[in-house]
Image (cartoon, rainbow, N blue to C red; front, side):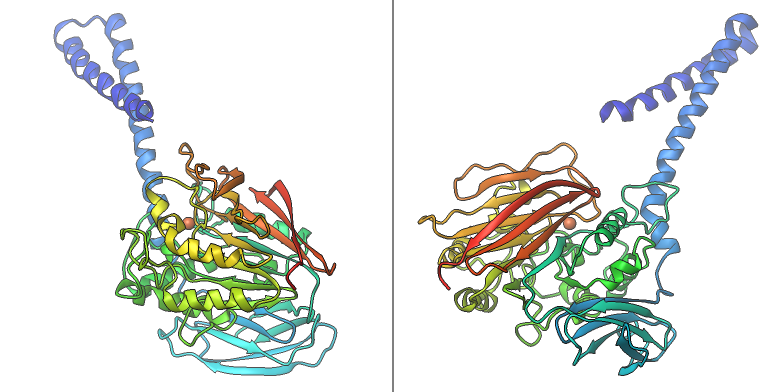
Length: 491
Ligand SMILES: [Fe+2]
């Protein structure tokens, strides 16, 4: 790295010095052309080449940081996407900057008759012209199309009431224009293109996106207002990498730190209040309903699998606090809700956490994950060990790791699949995932690749043994497969 920076500077300095000494000496003192002109010409070429290379380095940096901010604020964005869909209802998010009153209509794919849906009005500037429609009383396992008077069209498919075999994708972290290529559209998101190809070839029922959908602070923060956050969402949704297949797929969201600022642990005060409003409008309104009014965490069930999607940012104690009783990632109310869900749900349980549950990611950032909240983590693990088993899904680290959390009696099976980013950097040199304690058994880890997502296929058709097939997809390639089972002993 140092060499790459210093050699152009050395060439620039030496050629500069040679030119300044040789040229005056040649023209004023010793006019020996064959001796001096090659030296002067070569030094000039070296000087200008090095100068142009350095100028290009500066230009690509400025282009990378500022192009989207200057040219793509997304004000014109008009789009629609599908949110949570179950066997009888669907949510559709639209943005219509030029239409004040929007009506949605929908119909079964094979029936010509349109059914009028909700009519919603947006006040300009209030919610960034974003509206979320709820379509209800739908038929199970049926394909629907929808349209609006603001020229949106799309489709979705309702689920079976009790599906026994189905698939989902989990990932987190998106930043447009990375990795930089000057010839790309600056909102390009290569990971969305990999995902789009994957969903066109596989049955995927929904995407669970675990946060860092925007990076308000990377590579550069342009502002701190709610308007700045809205702009970041508009930019991601304006990306040419979205396909109609991806917008037709139900996406469920939770947010993480970069929807607020890096490693946020400032509770729900100050900056949080400015940052969260765009998240609520663009993402949360189309999630399953929160478990409590005004909360952001939620639970939903698909077939024999129940999900508890935690909010690991809003209620957490400062990550700088000493670990122990009183330090919390979830806050007391959410933790109690999670504990009672663990005690009462008699299906396969999936806990979703924005940040990794394992402590195996070491280094200065570890305190931002559950590694900095081990006291509360232990409480939760002991509750999980009282069940047949729990699957934990997480993101945030821009790496993949599968980790086991063995119960002392060996009867309960707890496993975490942590998979990210969908389209963002990974640490090129530092390897931080390492098993030290036997509480967190490292099964597999894969740090490399700018695009990672996990595809999970649940199969609960057998009464005694339920299976989960996990597939790790990196830069569009199937890299690792793992089968996990759950024996139904405590029904
Ligand atoms: Fe991230």
